[in-house]
Amino acid sequence: MLDKLFFQSRNLEKALDATWTRNDVISQNVANVDTPGYKRKTLKFEEFLNAETRTGKIDRGLTGLSGNDSVVTEDNAATSYRIDGNNVDIESEMALMAMNNLKYSFLVQKITGEFSKLRTVIRGGK
Image (tube, rainbow, N blue to C red; front, side, top):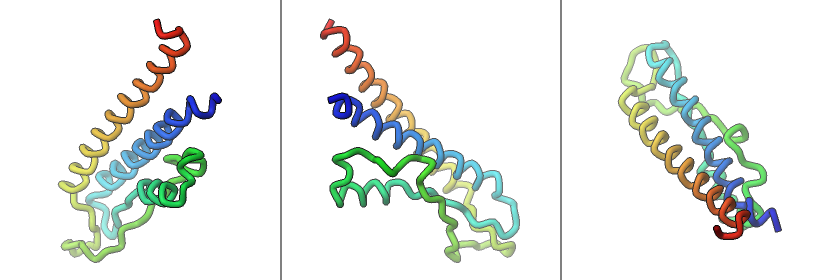
């Protein structure tokens, strides 16, 4: 019974973890914008979330997923216009960070709403 009550909260928590980790990855990219040969990193969480949804595992919650379990990959695409081989585009990274911050704020609001609902249930609807 309690599992069903906290199902949504656990999934939101894991999404928050992934968003936090993505912020760290983007920050690392920004910090290395002038490092010769540095390849930008990306975090794959939504891909795993979509796979769990398609396979029906999402019904049991995001058991194997969290921000820490998400995969950070290196972008080896030849998108660098720089001689030093660095492929970090500061404008793209800043736009990604802004979008990630919006996602994080949204998720915080959602989880706050979930806890507010639980508090209402515990107090007997008062």
